[in-house]
Amino acid sequence: MNTIGKNYRLTTFGESHGEALGGIIDGCPAGIELDFEQIQYELDRRKPGQSNIVTQRKESDTVKFLSGIFEGKTTGTSIGFIIPNENQKSKDYGHIEDVFRPSHADFTYQQKYGIRDHRGGGRSSARETANWIVGGAIAKQILKGIEINAYTSSVGDLFLEKPYQALDFSKVESNIVRCPDEEVAEQMITKIHEVRKAGDTIGGTVTCVLKNVQIGLGEPIFDKLHARLGQAMLGINAVKGFEYGSGFCGAKMKGSEHNDLFNEDGTTKSNLSGGIQGGISNGMDIYFRLAFKPVATIMQEQETINSKGEIVKMQGKGRHDPCVVPRAVPIVEALAAMVLLDFVLLDNSQNDSGLSF
Image 1: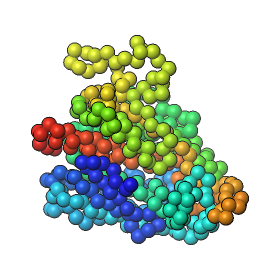
Image 2: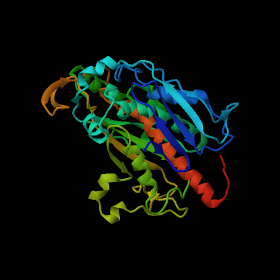
Image 3: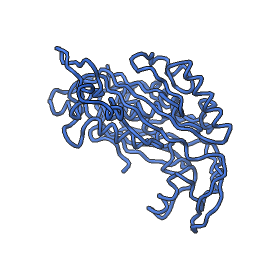
Image 4: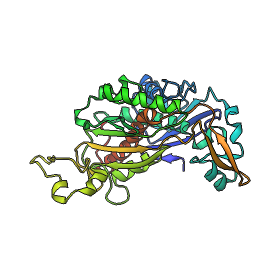
């Protein structure tokens, strides 16, 4: 499946070392005036080579729109776009043509399809996520009033202990690790440099906060809002876990501690539910956290197997992120925006209230 969404749908194509990435967006309302500079800004937040703690592959990630837009406004028809690949170094992957890298998609793709593009992982590469940024950047511009803010909340064993309410989200872009606390950010950057120097990689977490989300988004059973958010987020390369609200900490609590008691206006005194109850948004802040594993490609020698089933030794080559978390921040925001817009469009159709963008 290469499509996300039901009402606002993004279908994507492309490989890491192919000619281009791209996609088609269906279900976008007509008459939306787009800020193309803002779309490119979002792509720039994700692109490789933006700092010394990410992969040094140099890509401008310049998006070119092919259809669905006239005189700067959406027409209501399919929005087609491409993002050319400009800086592939396929020779860096010649050593794994017949070798399966540990913890990568190499082995499973070969077993499933009987063929794989070994250059940069092909379709399994995180370069695919550039397409998601385009869909999310447009969705953000439609969701006026809703604030979507993600940030790096941990790298390895370094955690940002402050609750999100105490953070200034405007500081997320003030440092290359995208942590809104300068002191903790410096520690994280140092940690990533140390790990990279050792030829290793490290994991971390991203926290995302959705503010001013209307009451009523989400469906009762299989399309619960948190379930759709979780499905989208678990589709991100390297994500190993998703929790919202109290998450796993809630499993340690008693009901008398965990219940969100109501105020007279329908808000709640606490928000351990994470803004979602019964799978439906309740108007409180929605917040969730994602766990990212360490990047599987490391610059250390490891044992693995080849296509003949023989044990061989290999070592990573090429340009790779020592920690994916900083570049994952805008990806998380983009997916959250697409999921929310999908439900907003459904809510408008169910209530027959027309669009109010």
